[in-house]
Length: 259
Image (tube, rainbow, N blue to C red; front, side):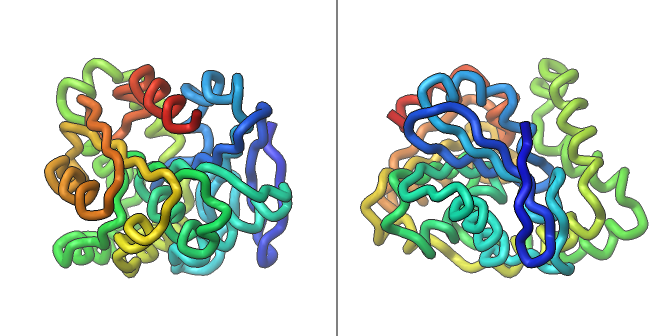
């Protein structure tokens, strides 16, 4: 059952289930905390699992038209403070990984472990920044088609057929994202800085989970990043959406990381 707090006059929605080591799960762009529903039951058997709807996603409100990683992190930290959490493990998918890096930068002594799931500590390439800028212009007149196209493109042809039902359910959640939430998050990702140092300069456990066929994050770049930042890396055989494409393998990897 979801709970709520107020942050800067905005509603923040979160859930808190299970007992044990505290694990905070942060969803990605055009997702919300329901993305974890397929793996949360296993993780919460022996752990306390916190899921949070980021600003402008799910049941959480927007704050303006730029959600920087700093403001995303501040909102998540408000929930963690409300829950009086002193130590925790962070797991962030895609955009959620960028937010987790900012939280770790702000609170390094509170972090027991950080997992980047289909995510990176690298900043956007210049080409990707231009794509985000263009998308924010186009989304205002063509929201449904833009979301549908960008979401489906996260999956390879084989996955689109194999996980058709799951992809459609996730797409329906994505389409609930308000246009303002889309624009604010996309701009925040566009202007975010490189966070390699957060991984390299801290001693908490670090794990990168990459997709061998990820169309967004090249697996070779992820392997280089892991080496550069002294992070462990696990490569799954799917693409960008490991909770759908590699659910059981992902659960195994996360449980080993948590424990």
